[in-house]
Structures are given as C-alpha cells and as structure tokens.
Image 1 (tube, rainbow, N blue to C red):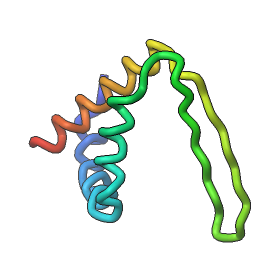
Image 2: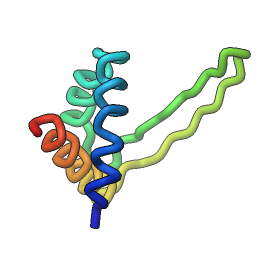
Image 3: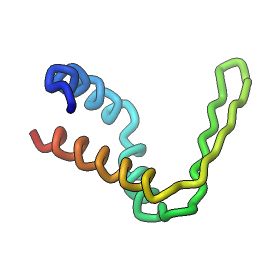
Length: 80
C-alpha cells in the first residue's frame, strides 16, 4: 500500500525534476513504447570527475508490468 503522505512529499520533487529536465519525460515515453520483453535497458552514469559506471539488464514481463504501474501512478499524480 502506498502511503498518501509520502506521495504528497514526492509531488513537488517530481514536478521540480520535470521542470529541470523537460526532455526526459518525452524520452521515457518514446522508450516505453519501444521496450518489450527481452529488450536490454542500459544505464550509464558519468561523475563530474570522469568516472563512468555502466550497468544493463534484460527486461522481463514482470519488469514491464512494474513500469506500467509506475507510469499509471505518475500520470495520476500529474492529473491531480
């Protein structure tokens, strides 16, 4: 069960993130449409010092179900 108070605390942080990174939402929407089971999701982080950390995972049906639920939660928050 999701704690409603926790969601309320997250709302301004999510809005701030959306405002700071306006291209990220459209990227996620495009990527979500392309992600299918067995797709590879890769993440790369480069620190200001130049250190790079990369990881990837092969998406499962359970992963896609989780992403769908998260999209649903975030879109319902956006519409409130």
